Length: 113
Image (cartoon, rainbow, N blue to C red):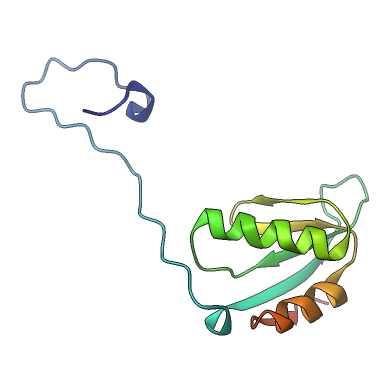
């Protein structure tokens, strides 16, 4: 039995052959750190002139991505968040982040200009 929150707007159907389907896709399993290729970008767009380090390319479950973000924030001594399968860390901390990620076994490099 599915919950009403999972139905995304469908409340009732008079069609006896109706079967509700969601667009929910399975999250991929988290790859080992040595198989991940992370790219670190410096971004200022749509952030009121503030600089953020954007980390993308993580393949895995959202919970593991959030855990990685938490560790990076702690290591860099700054705030951040996870949004759209990307890690956003406040400030230009690309060098610190790359060093820490490489110590953890990740492949990481600076991207962009």
